Image 1 (cartoon, rainbow, N blue to C red):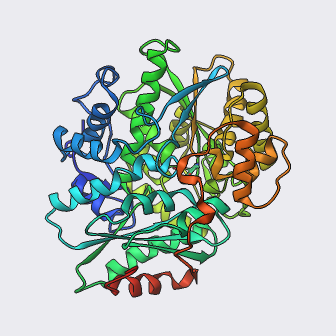
Image 2 (tube, rainbow, N blue to C red):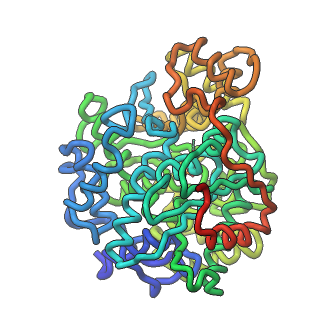
Length: 502
Ligand SMILES: *Cc1c(COP(=O)(O)O)cnc(C)c1O
């Protein structure tokens, strides 16, 4: 056990440390690195004991380990405030058997995306962190979204005292339903703006704003500090560790596994946050076998996890699984750090990525990665085929992102006849991508994306989540569209405005 195990440190410098509450508040480390614990192995919990606990106490216990300056009681209160009555089911993230696999439904929250799991808690965590750190400044959340984070963050932070939130999304990079969800968001402290560019442009823009504002002290005298709701913020990542445990618990209790059996998890991956949460669960002692990284045609991670060469110099594809249309997966940086323990190495690789668009990790590190991770990808036609097949064979309707993971899970099993039981993480409701899902089950679409919702419901009898009903009837409240090099200007202008949506 390392000495400073309760302090977070930057992936790019061991000397840059922060208490957990500070790390949550700052979002990103001042040197551009991501805050992480040096090692998530904790001495004071046993996974066997966690599995005996009820949902919310288990969540509180796991989160207390990850953010150790919160007490058990504090964390339980935050978790209860965040989740009670907000999800469709009491177990928040049900694990459903589909054929011989298990689908972990992470989309039963208030915006029908798995991001709700983390973003329901983050505002509570952020306010509590501010209090712990004696910070009275207003917190301005900046978020880049590939579609789902935006709405979940808007919903989570809507009218939370002491906070405001600006969401940037790629103008043509999100589904019609995702766009409508964001543009109809009410609340006095919320702002949504389209960027002419793709998700990577928006994410890079946000990261640059953090460093420019800090370096030049651009918000000096305004009692405002910036933070992030993206998975670069450890407060966004930590809540996602919980469902790896709850899935294991459900499989145990339903007799699909025995205590101690390994379980493989297949994760539809974009920014590498979700799958990294699985890695953290594994470090905490959960018997996680393989972590299977599923990508769409933007298969930069597939190549990396196979060869150790990360190369973003490639064509960016707009796919039917848009929340995974990403070429720069931020959280990979945390994995490189956790495995190598070498901040100098990570800093060098990240600088090279910025400068040259690629890097290669040392062979020893690649070998460590391959012990845990396996990777494959799935193009749009295979995605559609997977949705169709799962529907016909199992009468289970899945969204495009889940279908990518389902397809890759089948490839994995075929290549590993002695595989452990597989959990496929399901990250969105099929009703967020109704056009693609409708086509995949062989039905001709009539009308727009919203008509497709009704058509899909009529064809499948799978109920539409309440939050997606009547979306097209709601007024559009946000209309801003800007060039990607105008993001800083936009934020500064907004930040000093006392009233947004009076
Ligand atoms: C964000 C998202 C993903 C990717 O998750 P990461 O943590 O970015 O890897 C996958 N599916 C859906 C539906 C998402 O919204």
